Amino acid sequence: MALTSRIELHGPPASDPEDYLSASLGVIFPDDVTNQHGDADHSLVYLSPHLPKPLHIALADPSQDSDRKLFSHYLWNSSLLLAELIEAGSLGLPYHVGAGRPKPADFNVAGLECLELGAGTALPSLMAAFLGAKGVVASDYPSTTVLEMLRNNIAANATVGCSPLGTLAPITVAGHAWGELDTPFATQDRGRFDRVFVCDCLWMPWQHANLHRSIAWFLKGAKHGDRPSAEAKAWIVAGFHTGRAKMRDFFAESALGTVELELESIHERDCDGVEREWAWDRGHEDVSERKRWHVVAVIRRRSAPSSGVAG
Image (tube, rainbow, N blue to C red):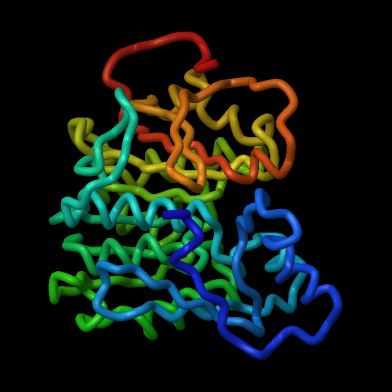
């Protein structure tokens, strides 16, 4: 089933010519995939056959350019993909993966402390709360508009009635700018988390180092004197819609090594579940084609000294 099939748009009918065109792109260009969903006038309904109730996701209307440039007022396909992986792993559902890829069970959140960085609409965080996590924090840039959207979506959906297990982990919201590690939240929760979720946060190359620092800071084993936790991992999912060149350096071995992190696994997956090897460079990639693809990576604490670049 296509990745975007779980999403329905709800709201007033289109009235602007641009709205009609946007809504018709999938018909005019059947191979084109929408990789961002919703707007302030149209909420989203997330329908999973494994959840007792649909989730209702509202989106913000950023009034400040600084908020608009964060692009957190959309639901992105990378969040849909990680939500499905968490669901499959935590419920033991069949899910196609290629040879050498992480198995669905590797995305099981049962009993784990989870943090989402750049959470946006918080869909993966909500799924983790429904599916057996010990505790969940959904964080995003400390903007009033962004955090209000996060809190509203969690308040609307974080109920036991939405959980297939009949349980709900504590789920909270925190403001966090990547790399800013002297705030009360960062100080209090350093080294707390077994899993860190990162969805579609790699399109700003100038923020890669800050994102590395935040991941390393919050993963278990970060506190002085703690033993590095081999089981603490970050799950990274990102679309290629902004171009491979902008995001690939995030995975450079030397850059990850700066904060004692390393790749455990990395591959590419499209919106129909087709998988292929990760490639540092595929030459020219058509925009419509690359929008279909995501990188799926697992990052952990570095187990041994290494050198070179993941290319």
